[in-house]
Image 1 (cartoon, rainbow, N blue to C red):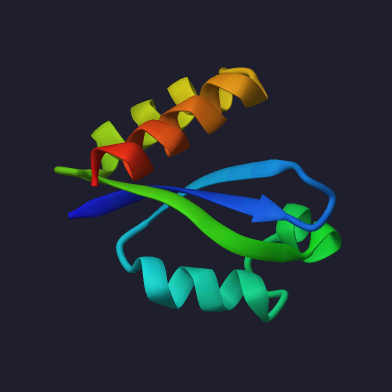
Image 2 (image 1 turned 180 degrees about the vertical axis):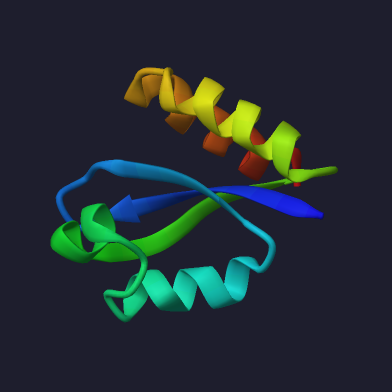
Length: 84
Protein backbone atom coordinates (compact mmCIF):
# COMPACT_ATOMS: atom_id res chain seq x y z
CA UNK A 1 0.00 0.00 0.00
CA UNK A 2 1.24 3.48 -0.90
CA UNK A 3 0.23 6.94 0.24
CA UNK A 4 0.21 10.26 -1.56
CA UNK A 5 0.85 13.10 0.87
CA UNK A 6 0.98 16.90 0.88
CA UNK A 7 3.20 18.93 3.19
CA UNK A 8 3.17 22.63 3.94
CA UNK A 9 6.59 24.27 3.94
CA UNK A 10 7.65 27.32 5.92
CA UNK A 11 7.66 29.50 2.77
CA UNK A 12 4.00 28.58 2.14
CA UNK A 13 4.65 26.15 -0.70
CA UNK A 14 3.02 22.74 -0.83
CA UNK A 15 5.13 19.64 -1.43
CA UNK A 16 3.56 16.46 -2.84
CA UNK A 17 5.16 13.03 -2.47
CA UNK A 18 4.54 9.30 -2.10
CA UNK A 19 5.57 6.81 0.56
CA UNK A 20 4.71 3.48 2.15
CA UNK A 21 4.98 4.96 5.66
CA UNK A 22 3.65 8.49 6.18
CA UNK A 23 4.89 8.90 9.76
CA UNK A 24 8.44 7.81 8.93
CA UNK A 25 8.58 9.97 5.80
CA UNK A 26 7.19 13.02 7.59
CA UNK A 27 9.89 12.67 10.26
CA UNK A 28 12.53 12.41 7.54
CA UNK A 29 11.27 15.67 6.04
CA UNK A 30 11.23 17.35 9.46
CA UNK A 31 14.81 16.22 10.11
CA UNK A 32 16.00 17.59 6.77
CA UNK A 33 16.50 14.14 5.23
CA UNK A 34 13.44 14.18 2.98
CA UNK A 35 15.04 15.66 -0.09
CA UNK A 36 16.44 18.95 -1.30
CA UNK A 37 13.13 20.77 -1.77
CA UNK A 38 11.83 20.22 1.75
CA UNK A 39 15.20 20.49 3.47
CA UNK A 40 15.73 23.94 1.97
CA UNK A 41 12.18 25.15 2.67
CA UNK A 42 11.61 23.44 6.06
CA UNK A 43 8.44 21.42 6.54
CA UNK A 44 5.77 22.90 8.82
CA UNK A 45 3.00 20.29 8.80
CA UNK A 46 1.36 17.36 7.09
CA UNK A 47 -1.71 18.63 5.22
CA UNK A 48 -3.19 15.59 3.53
CA UNK A 49 -2.80 11.87 2.84
CA UNK A 50 -4.62 9.44 0.61
CA UNK A 51 -4.20 5.72 0.08
CA UNK A 52 -3.28 4.23 -3.28
CA UNK A 53 -3.28 0.49 -3.94
CA UNK A 54 0.21 0.34 -5.45
CA UNK A 55 3.24 2.38 -6.45
CA UNK A 56 2.05 2.89 -10.02
CA UNK A 57 -1.25 4.44 -8.92
CA UNK A 58 0.52 6.56 -6.31
CA UNK A 59 2.99 7.92 -8.88
CA UNK A 60 0.17 8.77 -11.30
CA UNK A 61 -1.82 10.53 -8.58
CA UNK A 62 1.29 12.39 -7.39
CA UNK A 63 1.94 13.63 -10.93
CA UNK A 64 -1.70 14.68 -11.28
CA UNK A 65 -1.66 16.67 -8.02
CA UNK A 66 1.72 18.25 -8.81
CA UNK A 67 0.13 19.64 -11.98
CA UNK A 68 -2.55 21.46 -10.01
CA UNK A 69 -2.42 25.06 -8.91
CA UNK A 70 -2.10 25.82 -5.22
CA UNK A 71 -5.79 26.71 -4.82
CA UNK A 72 -6.94 23.34 -6.12
CA UNK A 73 -4.60 21.55 -3.72
CA UNK A 74 -5.89 23.59 -0.79
CA UNK A 75 -9.49 22.97 -1.87
CA UNK A 76 -8.77 19.22 -1.77
CA UNK A 77 -7.28 19.54 1.72
CA UNK A 78 -10.27 21.57 2.95
CA UNK A 79 -12.68 19.09 1.37
CA UNK A 80 -11.00 16.25 3.24
CA UNK A 81 -11.18 18.17 6.53
CA UNK A 82 -14.85 19.04 6.01
CA UNK A 83 -15.69 15.42 5.14
CA UNK A 84 -14.55 14.25 8.59
